[in-house]
Amino acid sequence: MKESAYSESAARLCSACGMCCNGVLFHGMAVQPKDSIRAMAAKGLKAKRRDGELQFLQPCPAHDGNCCRIYADRPQRCSEFACRQLQGVFNGEFLESAAMEKIQEAKRRSDRVRELLEMLGDDRKSRPLATRCAGVFTPPLDPSPQAEALREELRRAMSALEEMLAKDFRTGQAR
Ligand code: SF4
Ligand code: SF4
Image (cartoon, rainbow, N blue to C red):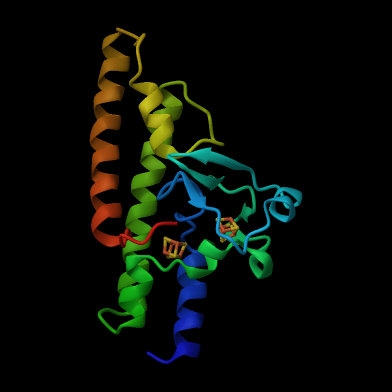
């Protein structure tokens, strides 16, 4: 695919998705030598040492309605990252329409996980989705049958989402 056509496809797909910015795919993105922590802090991005590296935390505060508010100045890793769907479109493995269907399905799955989290009393929207799920399974747990059933449904919903993220979105390339 030509670079210009790819850029247009990527813009349409990413603006319908946002999962590599909103805490669904990643907890954070590694700070790179070219990144200025101070300049990013002025734009609202927080950096923290985690898993042995300095990371900008996700969900990213610059992510706004599936757009990046600081696109021209975004961190290096953001400009380098292309998920499996973007790579497949770029390489001609599948069409943009097929990638869009995958994105819509992954969004349905992540929306269901969020709904279940809220039903279980977790409204920590500023935390990554996996962190929120882990919190819900951390004792003490509500022993009521209703909470037990919701936790079981959440376990299944998260597992279905993770399976799809691993197969269709993650690339082995860190964020
Ligand atoms: S996960 Fe892929 S399609 Fe979605 S916003 Fe990130 S790069 Fe774009
Ligand atoms: S800086 Fe922009 S591209 Fe990078 S994670 Fe935040 S919203 Fe996404």
